[in-house]
Amino acid sequence: MTQTSEWLEAYVRAWETKAEGDIRAIFTDDAEYWFRPNDAEPVRGIDAMIESWREPEPTEPVHDLAVLIENDELGIIKGTVSYPGHADYTNLWEVWFASDGRARKFVEWWMLPREMQPGV
Image (cartoon, rainbow, N blue to C red; front, side, top):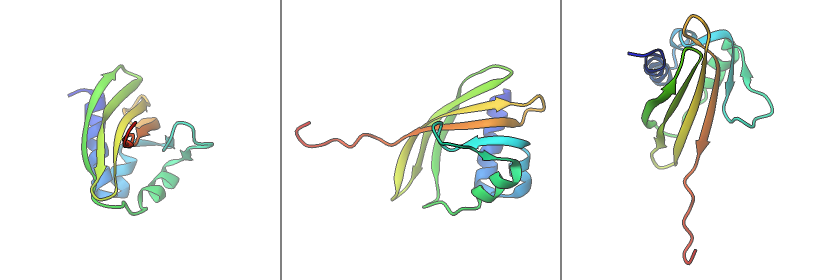
């Protein structure tokens, strides 16, 4: 198993449990979490990230995520996340690794599907 696939497995576990220890296991204490690449500021620091992860999800997410490419410093993950009855997202995630394998920076690039208009 590769560093990024191990990290992704741990991320999914933390996402499901929302447990503080699981979140701390995958992000450094001073990590940045960018929910969108063009946000003015990221969520900074593990305590702020833990708090943001406690916000309720619209529904139970269903995901299909896989490692696209990686090296020692960066992993790129692609896939989909669906919140049934709410929205479906296409994702590309940047995971910038610290030397201990935790993420020091995480960036979500997500898109909603284009709505097809009649006659377009």
